[in-house]
Length: 449
Image (spheres, helix red, strand yellow):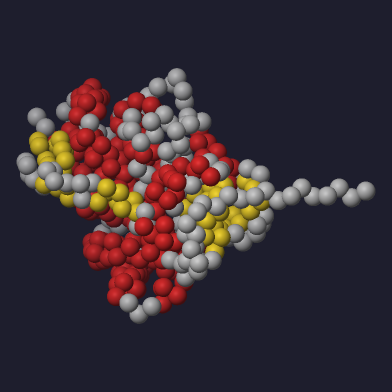
């Protein structure tokens, strides 16, 4: 006797779907509000970008299951297809065996001993930038911190003056590239990318200019042939232990640009939001200064001090929870997947939002309040699988230790010299493009004793 199959689980979908464009209009109007609005509909919700069905995972534990237990059944999705014109096929966007090979080749760059050496660069560059500021100066915080984190990652990538053009191109063109990626990700049709409009021309020119500058820098390093003690020299010398083969110039280009993007944008935005919150909470700033005095006294922070800055780490963690710079991550199902009883078909696009999934009131009481103390209390710890600021599984961020160290050093060094308060008339609000920016974040500088 044949037992009938159970009926398929009905997948909830929010209202507002329009003919042809689906939910794209709601996404374009306010991506963060739209993503957060999906939680009440279920742990897995189906929305439509144009006619394309997209499965949005709103449960943190299911996101962890997707990234860890189902890691072999998913690959990078539509979002990363849009990023490839900029980043190529580096560790950030690649799939399968090639992705694992690139991770192995890059791993030595983020060894603990190397990060200890980078700490001096982080401290010196931050102190140099902070030393250029003046009392009562009104600071465009996001721009300043973007320039600072770019200088830090560039100093670790390139130890020579050959890369000045790369830094200049990246500094000039990255905002155009981010805007182009954000628009293309949620556009209802890929035809948008081929329209002869100024935005597309600016995007194409920006990506071409950056690619050319990086390729010329790689060629100069190849011709020079010396080990300059930087990451680019390490990439040029790296050999796959299984095959003995090194990376091609194209592969090195893709990894350099992935490291530039990963080491600049997300770090700068997290730091920007952190100083925004410190400016709104003087009691937290006072506690930060007390920790600096206790741990460091009058000296500059070193690598051995990073683990001692427990309140700084709580500040960074809470900033990543409330203001995560990434609002959308996509995966594509390589085979059918079961997520919380919902059957995801092969080839389907799966989405989750690091920015909004940490606003679950069941996990974080008063989720929209900035409360660093929640990470210093052991009374109600959040399950590890429910907080994934740097991802999880085989695609966990390769540079997470570098980022934690850089943010700790930067916050500590700036706060030791300056107090930042909101500028009169500044109205900060989040702007979601490819990442989440603090729009109009202007702050006034006051020197610390």
